Length: 340
Image (cartoon, rainbow, N blue to C red; front, top):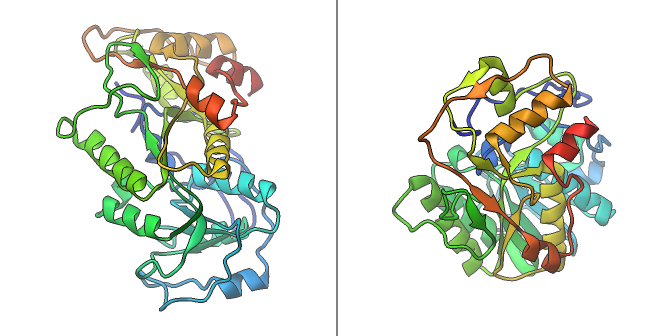
């Protein structure tokens, strides 16, 4: 059974402060399933200034009013899909460039109030890319949109080509299912084999044609306080799981994915493909052995019983690390478990 799609993540918040919850959430291949939920940790909760609200007017209609006038600075950032990853990117970006503005485009107004509270200027879609930004990152999930590629083109057209355009994709397109080695330059699944990989590859092509870059992320995970949710929790609850134990997973912590994305944006690459992973692939069995041995969970996992479901891949992103000048805060899932 794949690690993704094992239930949505509930993160509680009130009108003044996002609350902490505790979990370790794992996602295999495609990281976007959490992307529109509130953030996993409390970001800067300073209320936006009145000038911020004046410069970026919210609209309750699917588009902003015609051509709003917004003063855009050289380090301002637009985040399309400001979920967990996007909000962490915003946090790091504002630390790197104090005084900059971070804008966001969302599919609904559901989280606009909390985005404003953490200093992100939210809006729904605008008309004909009337706004141009030096830095644009697209981390919205395909399932939220009826025209994902169209949305991506619109976001790309909002880039003024002065800084960076980055699309956060997935490691799913790499054509490997025998637990073999895989890096940034490994072959990808041919178009037409899988609708899931088709949409990602077509999206990547759009961004590359605009001169932007792509960051293919492996399985994301993160921790919350007093709340556990994720594939490993599902496996713990079942005790015995009908999946093969030797399927290899590749992981990266959300904070590391965000710091890598920011590092790529700052370098102003053009037309490049990067890979985000911790370079410590683990089998399902190894993941659950680590969970059992961690002493952080009240239950013990028993075993996997599958024998014929697909295997995975062993990702390595040494080239990305060297070219970007980046290393993860959490070098492995085992290291992460020691910190929670």
